[in-house]
Structure formats: structure tokens, C-alpha cells
Length: 226
Ligand code: PRT
Ligand code: ZN
Image (cartoon, rainbow, N blue to C red; front, top):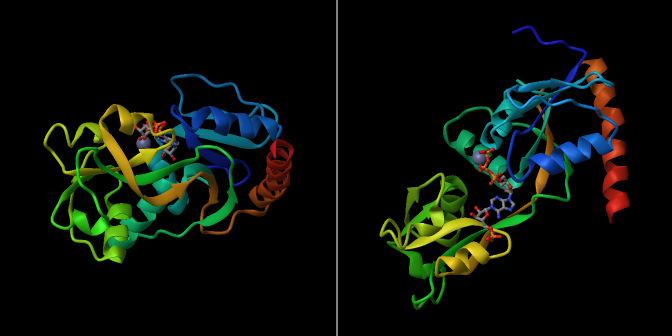
């Protein structure tokens, strides 16, 4: 695939909790895009910038592999992919450009409300359902807890009731989902917001100039909202 060395490629989530805010930020920075629902790639009509809209899970790898130049991704997904790649000896470098002010959430351990939970040691020998096995195991190792994982990419909160796990390690924002499923949040293992990241290899001079212009604009947008 021949990619221009002059146009900056930005990966954002196609549809989900980060999509609207990611678009809003880029638009507030002066980039105009006309999006076609079916298309992955959108060219900016007023700047040498292309947008790649994909599943959020793919964004860290695309940046680390240099397939795209920069990307906007939740810190939870970024850190999970970084740990997974470290474990499997795949390049996991990137550079962190900015911490953004949306997509805020926490990754927490929660147990059924009827459980007599005294502390994280109570999870020894238990099974925990999660979408984030590397973040979870990294936390458990630091706590000296030995627990197994049930990896689910969705519906994590129903796992205990379904008899698939004793506890969950899931993203929480308001806590309503845990509550609705009879679960109580016990430990916050990671807090997250959206991050702007760049590929590890240096950019061409043309692309670097675009990033150098983008970052102060982002800082301006973030400041104006404070
Ligand atoms: O399709 P794709 O793979 O791109 O999207 P996705 O379904 O994997 O991700 P998506 O859109 O749900 O979330 C994208 C990112 O938004 C996450 O990786 C987080 O960085 C961030 N984010 C912020 C959240 C939440 N808040 C959040 N509340 N992601 C998920 N949730 C879910 C949570 O998993 C649980 O099911 O919302 C529910 C809990 O919400 P409360 O308010 O009931 O606590
Ligand atoms: Zn996802």
C-alpha cells in the first residue's frame, strides 16, 4: 500500500464512546471531514490529513506498527495492548502526545453484593471475568494474588450470575451497570481517559509540521474547556 509521506493519517474509533468526542476535537482544531458511513478512510477537505475509522482495539497496534501516524485511544486499551505485546515480544513503542479530557472511566474489580469481601486477597483461587486480562493479571501479580481469568469481550457484568466467574474486572463510569447486575465495586485497578499517541518512528518533515501545528490547537481547545 502506497501511502503519501505528506498526508498525516489519524486513527479514531469508528463508532463507540470515543467517536463523537474524537471527531469534535479534530473539528475544533480546524479539520473538515465529510464522513461516509461505509468508508474506513476519510480525507480532510481543507488539510493534508486523512482519518482512519476502525475498532478501538486496533488503534494501539496500528500506531505501534506505524501503519497510521497518530491515533486517539482509551488509555485502558492502550495499556492492555502494550502489556500484551510485551508478553508476546511484539514491538510496543509509541509516543504519548496528549492526555485528553474525554472517555474517562476506571477499570475496577467488583464482586456480587452478597459476598463477604474483605480485601483483594479474597480473590485467591477465584475466577475473574474481564476484557482486560493483561491489566488484570498485572494488578494481581503486584498484589500477590493468584486468580484465573475468564476472557469475555462483552457482557462481563453478567458472568457471575451466569456462573462463569466469581468476580468481574470491568470498566465503570457511573456504576449503574454494576449496580443493575448486583455487583459492588471493590478495587480500582486502573483509571483512564482518551490519549493522543504517535507512532514510534519519526515522521516525515511534512507530517511533523502538521503535528506541530495540531498540538497547540489541541492545547487551546483543552484550555478553553477548563
Ligand atoms: O466497537 P469498538 O471495539 O470500537 O468499541 P468498544 O465497544 O470496544 O468500546 P466502547 O465504545 O464501549 O468504549 C470505548 C472506550 O470508551 C473504552 O475503551 C474506554 O476507554 C471508554 N469508556 C468510558 C468506556 C466507559 N466510559 C464505559 N462506561 N467504555 C465502556 N464503558 C462501559 C462498561 O464496559 C460497562 O459496560 O459502560 C458500562 C459501564 O458504564 P456505567 O456508567 O454503567 O458504569
Ligand atoms: Zn473495542
